Length: 231
Image (tube, rainbow, N blue to C red; front, side):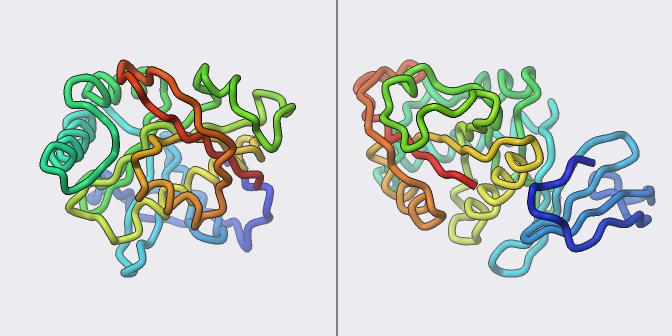
């Protein structure tokens, strides 16, 4: 199990109940870090147990085909809020994101989901692929190797679960994942209209390096806020 750059408190072998298969008890290597408990099950699948701000357990793991409908439903609920005027994200239904957005991430092995009591409550794509317009951004750390940059894409939280800290917890997972994979530089983006996301990222220590006008995933006229952080 690859470990974060910050040394864990303890690494040990335990027998635990696998969260996806509650009837099965299996050996699992667990590493205790600052905010998460990382587990490697017997099939080699990495998952993380996280507590939200109410102390409720949630798990971040790689997405599977069965997660696609739930992730797509989160996208639709966000589109609903945008169309009702109760939230502003800057996305357009049937353009971006769609079920195909989640499926492309799954096929690339980049889809991660947060599960709480069997339901997907958040999802994102995490990889080292930088959006082409990042080349036009005046980054604070401009000359870092691409293989040391981890990028967070399309982070979504089920609107019905807003305020429970799932977004903050997911970003914490993303940062731990970047550390484990030797990527001390973090980059992400959001629509300038999405003030809630901008506030969240600012609170978590992300710097707005620049705002780039572009067509983003088929959406014209986007002012793309590009953010970064060094771990």
